[in-house]
Image 1 (spheres, rainbow, N blue to C red):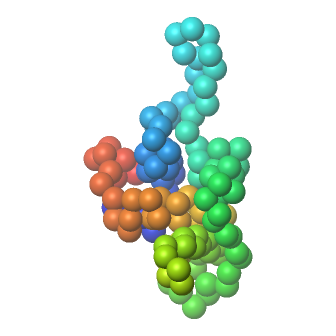
Image 2 (image 1 turned 180 degrees about the vertical axis):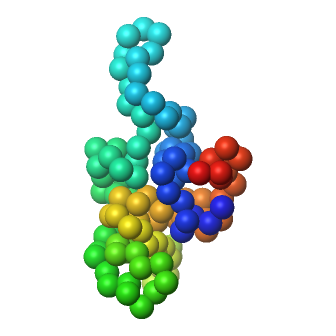
Length: 122
């Protein structure tokens, strides 16, 4: 699936994969009484915000009226490779968190990623 098209559960699953965590689609309590939250990086600033800060992802409001997809947010991450060489990753989204999480996933996993089949039907 194209990273630029990830939304909802599929995007949250991909971010969890980048973080080396298991994806969880519900809040609950584990077997010894510890509460846990559902994985919602693309809608919960408490989960997605620390990734944005840690990874140095920049967010800007943009006017994309000339583009078919009209995504109002652009995110980018610049990675210093060697001396004067840099790699840039840009992604767009309908919200700041969606744009930033797409950027993170693209920088970690690439433009196209393999998804579990049940997540591609969303």
